[in-house]
Length: 562
Image 1 (cartoon, rainbow, N blue to C red):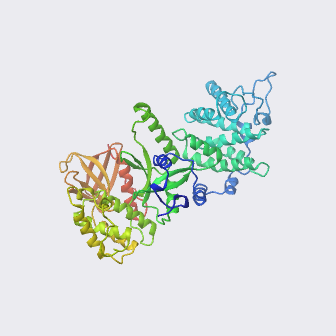
Image 2 (tube, helix red, strand yellow):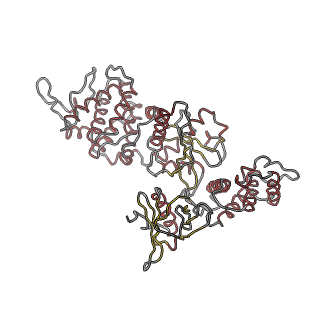
């Protein structure tokens, strides 16, 4: 996984400038570029349907057909005559504004909003004089659209089509297409307009105007994507808007548990699922199922991202939270920040030949051991520390070895270092390390993983919960969910109070504030309830493990009974 970020690997934190690293650590998109291969990977993952395949789905459709069926031709001019299709669907210049909506809208308030939208569209494009800059018009329009109904969203898309058709000003035309891309990054057209909007994009693909053609083809691919995703929840950041205008990705940093990171290109339509797919491809991971992207806060709270969650929408949300926090506490106050972490979510068995996946599993294991997430003995920790040194440094050099002098905290949990002489522990680790001479890096990793896999608690995700109506448990317990089952752990003594292996689980479920496990058989069953606000994630992770064990989907899991 090592290497320079620009070349597609993982780079040390120290290799990045403090300013850029600080921005990226908080998930802030940066203007820095990424390598050509990473850009190509984004295109590969984002556009899985060819232009020709999309064109085949809209063959024979034209935007004018939509206008003839849905536009309001009675424009109430001086002579009360109806307008023509060509006029109503073409650029309205000379700083003129529409007097009512293009589309037939029965609500007078919506008609008034449509006129205001047209003011922002033409203001952004430079078709009329205005005291605001184009970004002001952009955000005013988007802020309205994220909260508006489908009819008004369709109206805006139709206005952009109108202002980019037969527009004599090249700069204005390109600005209109840029606005089209920005809108497609934020909210979908309605079901009736969707195909006709794609038809309009398709009509503008060709050699006559290469720049317009590039934007039109890009927009053609985004229509179905935004329809599938739906409207986003946050206004895009300025960096994202500028990237949309240039048809460029933005760069975010993804951290790993070993304090390395990779810079990844994303766009407005990159979901967490696609993001994880890109990371696996870029890192050379063959089996992607165990891995996921997490949101981690500076307070060490974490959650796995939902598959359809948009990366840049989340970044915009983080930015808003930070801005609101600082407005309350002060500009220089310490506030909670967030970053992306790529790590193991599901501890499935992986092939020894999947080298990158083995490395990620090893990184996860060493992190969890050193972070004392597993209750292991001091001797276990020393043995694992020796394997970790062998993996990192290779064979013992012979004689005196200073590889771990002053570095024990990289290899042993803090609890073993308190009130202890480091030299004593160093000696024990080095003694075992010397016996590992000849182990390759991969062999050291696999031996480390084999060691920790023997523990009952290995690979557990931990959730605090309150048992309901059960005197066998203390008021609060930790539920440890792993590939073998669900363990109930005493948070004070770390004692295993109860085990629910999946072979004994009949079903399970959750509600907004509970998680339930049903054990037994088809004749006799026992329900165990736990109060928790993490029931959904617990339900999902149990379902993933059970489906994996059964080799496919299962009907287990769902809403818990009230």
